[in-house]
Amino acid sequence: MKLRHLVLGVALAASAGMASAVEFTEEEKLWLGMKIYERAAGRGCGTCHDVRPFPDLTESIKRLSKEEFLKVVKEGRPGTIMTPMAPQIMKIGLVEKACMTEEQALDALYAYLKGLSDGTVKGKVKKPKTLKEKLKGKCE
Image (tube, rainbow, N blue to C red; front, side):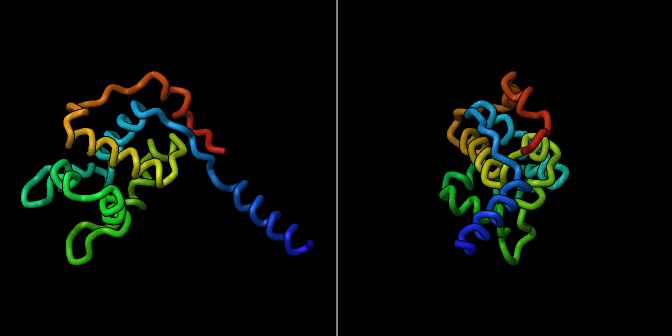
């Protein structure tokens, strides 16, 4: 019994320091994904990916599974200038302010790029009014 209480206590203590995930609508996710694309690495993913000879992400996303895309963002591509971007994405002020988990941030980025790729997103995404309360930066 003592071991069980110790494990439970450790789990509760660990979870107390973690931010709880805020739920986002699809519209919110697309806007957040667009902002992540614009702000990653300080100048945005497009700094490289909107310029030849680098891969156009709206084309790459047609060939990559979501899992493959996430792996590249998390691990980079060895032997290229594509470094792991997930740590940099998590440092974006908006990502921190929205209390996003890494999974949520990368999912939002993927959703935005997938939308551009399949034509369901055209250009800029309008900021949903529902995000106002979610961007107060009060992570629990």
